[in-house]
Length: 67
Image (cartoon, rainbow, N blue to C red; front, side):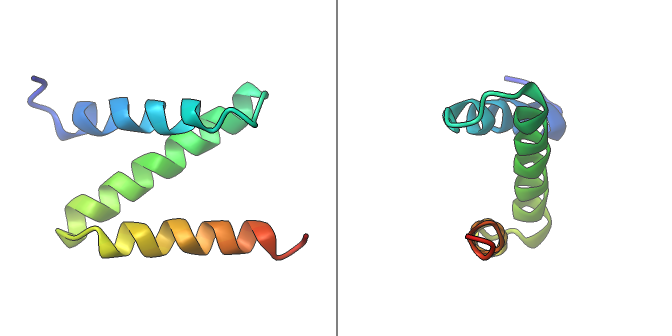
């Protein structure tokens, strides 16, 4: 088990980006990984999932607005 918080956030972040199979460009996967790292950081800082869920929902809402 890694002792580093970053290492513990990186693996789920990579899995999060890979689960979004509708994206084929590596740049998009990098952005998704970074976004997931932000969500993990929000979870650690707030000591709650509520902020991460809110940020994810806000991101999805913003993505849907132009449609």
